[in-house]
Length: 183
Image (cartoon, rainbow, N blue to C red; front, side, top):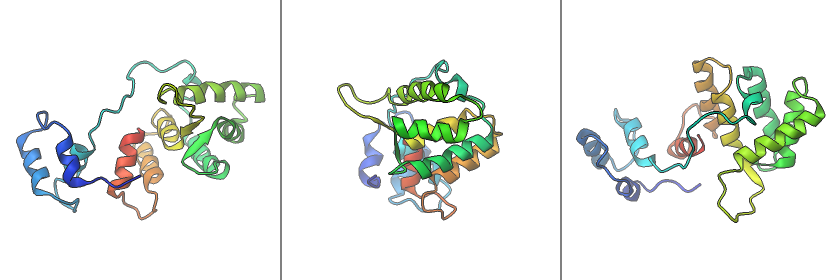
C-alpha cells in the first residue's frame, strides 16, 4: 500500500465538518510527528467514504459472533499458516482455516457451508463485474475480533497486534491507514 501523501490528502476532503482548531492543526503539520494533535491529524487525513453497510448482522455471520479469544487467536495463527500471501484468502483457504480452528464447533459439512456463506459475505464489496476470488484477511480477522466475546481491552490489543505489521509496538501511518480501510 502506498504511503499517504500528506500534502495532497489533507486537501482532498471537505474541511467543512472539522472544527477550525483541527484544520489549523492539520495545516501546521506537514508530517506526522509525535504531537498532541497526531490522532486528530491521522483521522482527518484518512477520512474516506468506506462504503460499508451499517445494519443488522447477517444470518450467515451469526455462528461467528461472540467467539472466545482462543478461537480468534487460533484463526489468526491459521491464516498465517494456510494463506499463501497472508493478506488475502481464497475460498479454499478460508475453509481450511475454519476446519483447523472450528472443528469442535462444526462438522465438516457445516464448515463447508459456513465458509461459503462467510466468504460470500466478505466478498460482497467487490466491484461489479470483478472476478475477485479472494477476501481481505485483515477485514475478516478484524470483524471477527470486534464481534467476538472478548472484553474491549483485549479486542483493542488484538487489533493493535494485528495491524502492527513490523512488530515494533507502535503503529506507523501506513498501518493506521490499513486499519481504517479494513475495519
